[in-house]
Structure formats: structure tokens, C-alpha cells
Amino acid sequence: EVQLLESGGGLVQPGGSLRLSCAASGFSFRSDAFTWVRQAPGKGLEWVASIDESGSNTYNADSVKGRFTISRDNSRDTLFLQMHSLRVEDTALYYCVKGGLGRPQGVDPWGQGTLVTVSS
Amino acid sequence: QSVLTQPPSVSAAPGQKVTISCSGSFSNIGSKYVSWYQQLPGTAPRLLIYGNNKRPSGIPDRFSGSKSGTSATLDITGLQTGDEADYYCGAWDSSLNGGVFGGGTKVTVL
Image (cartoon, rainbow over the protein chains, first blue to last red):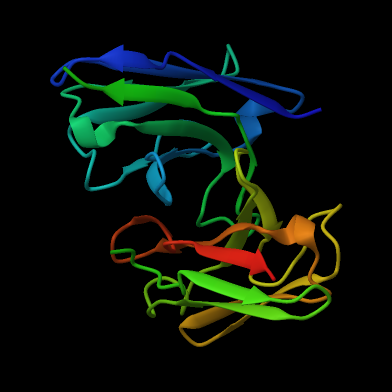
């Protein structure tokens, strides 16, 4: 069974940092692109970042460019999102998703999400 | 506002059909694949349609997708109470060089 398990969320002050992790199992991790999608409380989905199979190519939303970095460790079947200079508006549930929106297969499956709260 | 435009809500009686539109531009829907996602209350989204009009295994054929020009459509026929959810379209945008989602459409079964 394909599983994605996010961790690393929590409460952080504005300007702080967090590192999200996503542990994958049940498939060949190194054969797929990955994406982070977030959802602010009561709001819609927002694409955050994507990374290709090798990790050589990454893409970031303008809203997080220069602050967030997506990366992966194919030896540990793990995806990361390093977040710096966090803002109140970064408060959201962050989902790890297999695939990319530019791929014919879309993004699926989705993890259960990890909650990031930015507040003083 | 979202790059892809969806109606905020649609509704219909059980057994009827609803259509959800997703309007974009050439740099996204017009030249890229469209996918659709269903988010039931309190749960993570799941893939409904990929590659504009393909259903993953396990998705009933009551759900269908299509694309024409810079717009895409999700049809749900034989509406059931269990279909009450938020629905999102998604695509890649070559101008932004990033992913984009619609703002979401809430489906209500009357």
C-alpha cells in the first residue's frame, strides 16, 4: 500500500523556521516526482513546491520563493520542506503528495498533512 | 484570486447531474493536463480525474472530466449524498512555471 506520512509541523513564531518531512513507503520512491500542497484553515488548496525524481529540478510558488526549499533523500525514501522566515500567512495544513501537477497522472495519493501554525 | 476559476458552489437533488467548470488560459489548461480532486469534509483530497479525462481505479464512472480550449469540466451524474464535498481542478502553468489550483467548488446535495 502506498503511504505518505508527514511530520515536523508545529507552532512557531513569525520569522522562525521549521523542517517538514514526508516518509514514503509501498512504492519506488526514487521513481516519482513529489509535491507539497498547503491548505490554510477554511481555504482552498495552494501549490507550494515540486521536485523531480532525481532532485535536480525544483519549482516553488512565488509566495514561498527564497524562503522554502524542497528536497529529497532517495536513500531514505523521504521528502523534505525546509521553511525559513515564516509568516502568519504560512499557517496551513501541509500535504505531501506523490507526482506533479504537470504530469499526466496528476498528484496522488495525498498524505494526511502536518499542521504548521505561525503565531506570536 | 486563483489562476483557475471555479464556481464557489453548485447544488442538485439526489440522482441529478452537476457540472463544475474550471476556466484558465493557454499557459495552463490550454496546453497542459488537467486533474480534479475531491475533498470530503475533514479529509485529505483524493484524485478523481487525471490526464483531462481519465479515472483512477476505484473512481465510479459517475465522475467524468473533459477539456475544451482553455476550460475544463467535471460532471457528476447520479448525484449521491456522499458526493457532498469540495472539488478542485489543478494544472501546471508554463508561464508561472508552477502548479495552480482552482479556488474550489462546494457541491451540495439538496
